[in-house]
Length: 379
Ligand SMILES: *Cc1c(COP(=O)(O)O)cnc(C)c1O
Image 1 (tube, rainbow, N blue to C red):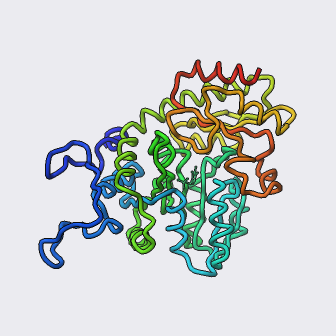
Image 2 (cartoon, rainbow, N blue to C red):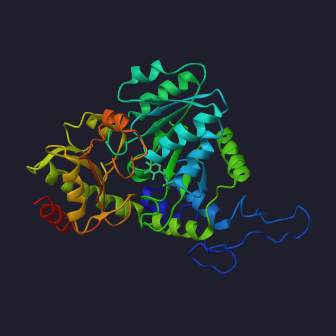
Image 3 (tube, rainbow, N blue to C red):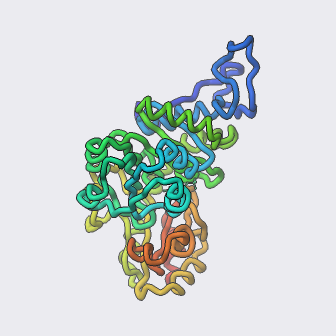
């Protein structure tokens, strides 16, 4: 099956009780058993719920994986994966990553004795330097947030296999429509379903997908043991969101390209970070592993002044000043004070998150309106 067909149909069947074409919101905590041990596959909703089950199958299918698991947030999904590790284990992680992931790794899990190495993953040799017999997980985010660096998933899969480590890719930015890390050799894919999968800025959710049965068993065991599950209503919303994922992402890509080309030609703009540009340092890798370049981009202003950046984000009218991304509406953000405020300034400057850096999540509105909004605000 092709992507759009899977997005709409995978994991979803007419409700056996009524024929309802949409998966019902099974708002129930427990399930009546016919006799002791004689149930219909569901016993308690922390362990499993039919609405969540449909969504987990659907997300697994669009990532070309076998097993899916959904959580109360993207960070709860990451938390589950890290809980597969033991004290003393080491993780090699992308250095330019989602601020909340950095905070989870460095302030929560570090104190449980897990060691994190944050490295620039553009250079494979640099990654190899941090690999040793204790390395159990390689954590990759690509495109990275907010610098839009592209990391070669296939290249890193090679290293992780040699090291006997699990490779997990945070695929939130790319979406399964543009990139499937499992096909490129990753063991696990992670999503903040809050973003493009949900797509309508009305839900917070996370997901993990794998085809490895041993890893899947651990994920389900931890999901059930820690209980960071997601609610049936939210599963219904994300199931509905995914039905239009391919259509939305097509438009995000078209609008993203128009905005990127507009900004790069504007006299007040210094740099534009968007992997679709031929002079983007990782453009070739992006072309090889992605089917499009998406609607996420960031840029800096000439002069690199904090006050100019704050003025610009206050002047736009259609772009809403907000954290998050991936919804139908366009958002604008200032990483240094918003999403990446928890990363120390010297770390931020090293990775390019300078004072005038602005990030856009280009939505699916009419591109002409987005361009005129930016034109007026920049003036
Ligand atoms: C938002 C986000 C997360 C965290 O997900 P939540 O749903 O907010 O917990 C992780 N990674 C990336 C790339 C994100 O954009």
